[in-house]
Amino acid sequence: MNVKICTIGELLVEFIAKEPNQRFDEIGEFTGPHPSGAPAIFAAQVAKLGGAVVFFSCVGRDVFGKMCIDRLKQDGVIIDGITIHNKAITGSTFVVNKNISEKDFIFNIPNSACGLISFHHINENLLNDCNHLHVMGSSLYSFRAIDAMRKALDIIKSNGGTISFDPNLHKEMLDIPEMGQSFDYILEYADIFLLSKCEVRYFANNNDESEKETILSLFKKGIKHIVIKNGAQGANYYGYDEQNNFKIIHVDGFLSDIVDCSGATYCFDATFVSLMLAGFSIEKALEYANASCALAAAKKGPMEGISSFIEIETFISKNIPRSV
Image (tube, rainbow, N blue to C red):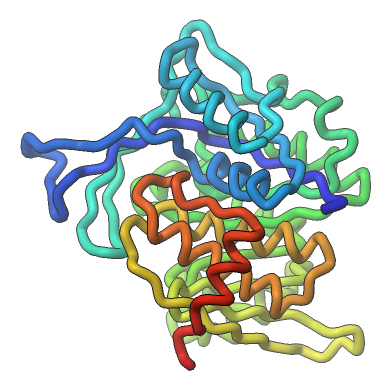
């Protein structure tokens, strides 16, 4: 792929409750640590597909930080943008599964090492040959982090590159004022907007607005491509063709044994963005992204389900879309 992608944000370890409906306020067992973080999973999946990807983050000078860096290096991510802090520990999150698709989190991000990423951690030399930036909404957790993102965005846009954005809404983070305030800014520059079906309502202008009306409103901000992700139900693409005709493309998803869907949507993002930028058709990019999502959900652990191009092709050849 003749594309080099950059992403920025949280790099942390994740501890997952062993039992369904386990409570945070009761004694219980957790598995982990698992290397995690939405942009980190995105970067690992891009690299697994053979793409060049630079990741900017911060970790503590501790065993968790080393574990995270080693994992990303193993997957092929360019780790030169990761800073090791001497006075802050690596971020963490604890996760309980309420049901197959709903989770509760306790995040230690704003006060951890990755919460301290700022403008000066973004090395311009690492961005000179990057032509795309992927932004995760969960990474906009402080003014420092937003300044770091703006620096990378300005450099990549000034070099003629493109931006993709996934709001990645977590109810646990919606009370961080900086996060919501930054969304409008990012959307002004985003070329590709990827959001889950349940997130569409957040961007609606009123409660009576249909999904299509919300989408058309978002296009007025200058976005060129919008993808609505809906797990095994597949995904919808909204955009305009060369004759400026509005088009909607639906590609069915795949059924799989869902074990842990925590990193699946980020694998979808990485696969769709990588293949679209590499010149694949929208239909093919969506098909491979749906397969990537299904493969990720079939493995326990946020990064354990990332898949290679060959693994995705093999999965597609052996499985039929959901509606068939």
